Length: 77
Image 1 (cartoon, helix red, strand yellow):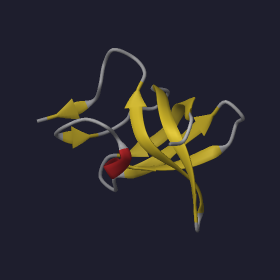
Image 2 (image 1 turned 180 degrees about the vertical axis):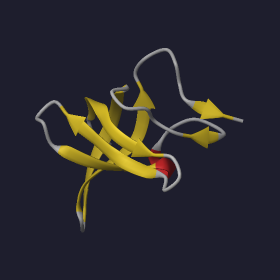
Image 3 (image 1 turned 90 degrees about the vertical axis):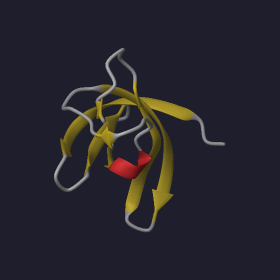
Image 4 (image 1 turned 30 degrees about the vertical axis):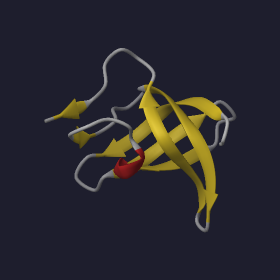
């Protein structure tokens, strides 16, 4: 299992279902709504603190098992 990393949301487009997280090294990491943990409509908001597992895909770095680190998780039923 991958080690969890921390970072924050750079931006996330709810309509398209993807965005980018910036890790502590300052790297941009792609995030897809399918990789956000939770139920219902999954979304992230700019500057949300997050934890995630890092994966390297064919197009670069990708976040998996993303969890919003604050008490507010952004899901809508």
